[in-house]
Amino acid sequence: MPKQKTHKGLKARCKVSGSGKIKRKKAFGGHLMSHKSSAKRRSLSKQCGFSKAFTKKAIIALNA
Image (tube, rainbow, N blue to C red; front, side):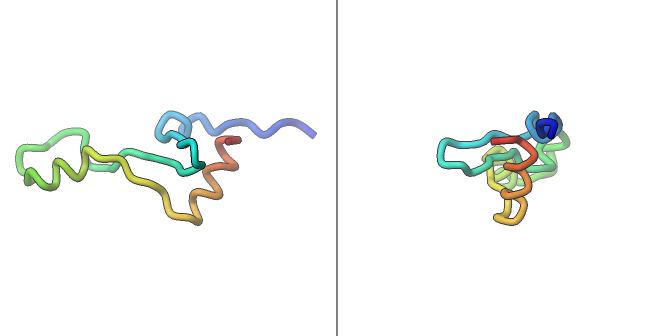
């Protein structure tokens, strides 16, 4: 049986913490910031996690 390959797109976009949680960057924070409020910009700069359902799939895809 061959080994499971790591999903390279997911590996580039997220990081597994020591406790097994997966951290990711929020969407819509790349550009066009002038019309967004300061609170929105601060919120977008922080990292967040995945849902429990997707975390299971992501850990399998990352071989973590």
